[in-house]
Image (cartoon, rainbow, N blue to C red; front, side):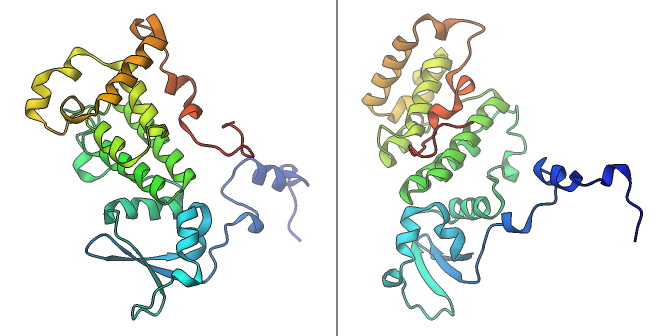
Length: 257
């Protein structure tokens, strides 16, 4: 029997496991099950194969879609569902998040985006679309993760999205947390350049050109509510002070810890 050192005394393993080490208790592992579902995504029906247990984990819509009466025969060896209202790229980000718990939203064309001249124009829409998809499939955890990723992207670049309002307004209700976050971005960080008419001429998709009037009214209301705080040099942004206000939680869950 090998000698046991002082650090191997009883209880050390428990502390290692509890301290978030690489080793975990087997019973803590998520159950993937053995059933694989085929998912045909987008107008061109790009194929994805995903564990059914993961698809059911946090999406109300997909739990219903995977009920026996919704499953459709298609010549596949697996059960198949169709999701035509999302782009395959967005769905792929979602699937990787399901498996790995991370949002892989930075692509090669973003390599110069970090502090460069494009200021997040590639990644910001991806995260917006991910939130919209989360709203569509009723996956609150995905929406919260997309919000966290969007906030992290703005903090990293010290840049804020200026062409997401119309897309958000058309695809989510005005009570959505993404809508509220975009309103606060404008209320707390707007500079004259953001609302310059030249932006609308150069980019018809920017918020100045196509955001609905209600969005701008809500921006004015949020600015008025914040008072002089928005003009201070050392201000603390609300998303930095309390990110949880842009999350959704059930009464049973409570707020973020």
